[in-house]
Length: 207
Image (cartoon, rainbow, N blue to C red; front, top):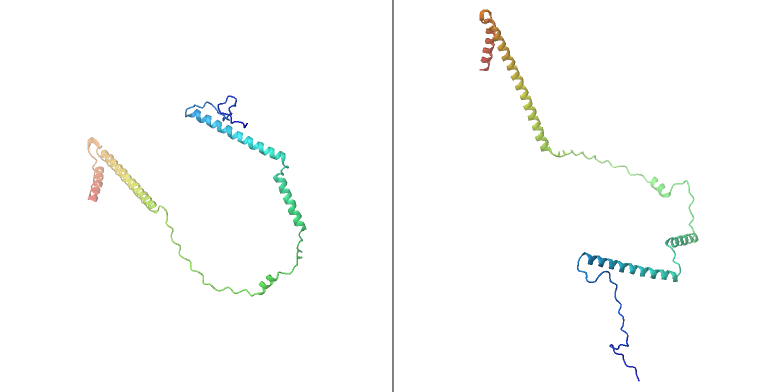
């Protein structure tokens, strides 16, 4: 009699175990900092496991296969092969050095060099005056400086004239005081007349 297909709900049939992926931390974490941190740790563990698997495969392949030569050994072998090939090739004979000049040089010396044609020297162009930067500003500054110097000179002249007037006035006052100091309170007409005459001449000159 042919064997019958076992039922799924048969207690004698052991249930097939399903592989469950590993988990890091609780599965019911809310979205936030902790969930992102757990996810980052899980991804890091998966990456490390993959690296370990690849390393194990490479190590097993290296153990079973022939030893691989390093880069330096391969470069040394390639240079040795090149040297061997160069030694096998026939070398061309090198011409012996001589004191005779080269034929091309002799030919160039024999040819007559053409006379230089007289060329009219080019006239020198007049150089254009370069535009000076900040020319307007320099002109304004120069004018301001000249005005300041003129004002300073006028101020000094006015101070000199004022000082001269004050000195003359003081001299006039002293002379008039001396003219009144005669005996018995009489005036000295000689001194007083000189001062008054100078004052009258000055007033007439102004008018």
